[in-house]
Image (cartoon, rainbow, N blue to C red; front, side, top):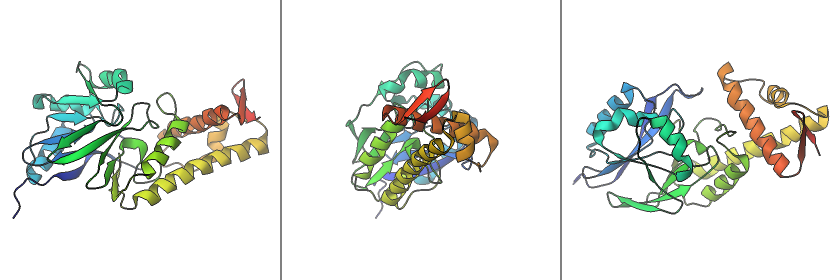
Length: 276
């Protein structure tokens, strides 16, 4: 007999003006009829609240009293402003504080989670991970009994997430992926797209793609001698889903170059990069 006490983890895709091939951003409702939380809040538009309230009603969930933001980007955080009447406590990582306040202004008060913090919702323990990469203050959530990981934009269902300045760091990202891979996982709730049902294989795919790009950059520099970020990006990404994706592709190339300079493999001279 169902009592409504079981904890549900529900992916809620909300239409947002995000980067192709994705057209929605995932929010996640976690809880039961007595208590629940919301992870990410989507874009600041009326559809955000309409969709969330419909899903809450369909699943018999209590009104969330807390919203945990994985990061501050405009397709994940500003939807908080549509949910003011819920009177939620809004959480982020302290490294994301200023960017989050800018994203949710005039909201003026945040609370913070740090790596290793634990919360209990509807009888389920949730472990908070500080998982930098896509942004410096990215938070990921691990529901240990269900072996579910909510990754924000560290993982997307189709392709790979962009990583680059000013928010992202490739060295941090690779370390985060290696750490997340050590978890026991049944599935991943990505920032965009369907549930990832082959979590470890998918993390391996993302790691493989990043190492492939790194080696590709080194090969191109060896072939051409020296190249700018724009030249490299044009050579690497010859087919993009839309021209507006070029900027984030360029930032991802730049993030690889920053890592390679940190590794003492690449040097920069007057905006041109070459192998050391």
